[in-house]
Length: 179
Image (cartoon, rainbow, N blue to C red; front, top):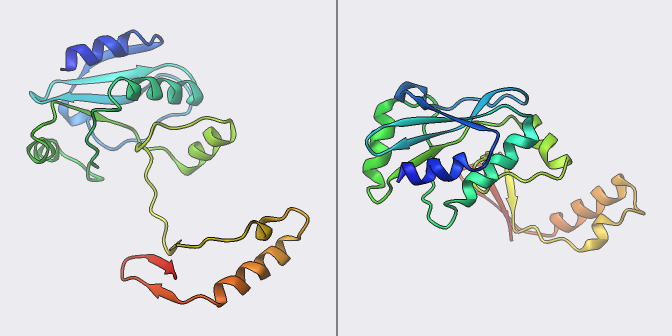
């Protein structure tokens, strides 16, 4: 229940939990520095709680990992529509009638994600989402293609040579599969 989760979250430290309103539950970007809601918690009776962290981006990511660790084995993932409404929340609870809490995460810019990864940070599973147009599947390359003694041009030529010998299947959705 929300009380148990909020109690666990409150034990993390450097977090402030404040009551919120249903219209605050939406897709929103997170700030890299300063006080900012790092997630929203919504109960089945639509009580809303805002979990606020006052630190920097890396501290916020660390706190998010600790929050997710409390429930990571008991989770159903879904995505709120971009311009979500309170009705969207109700629909999600109807679709997932076995769920009793919803944790809504912020959106991260690609620059924030790169910054966190370069510093060795890891996001909790499932809270970042990227659509990669024309992503390639089933491209298994020999390690020699990545030989640091070869120039980037030579590595690209090797890659082109390998891929030119493969059949390509283009899907209607933006996915390319190499056979």
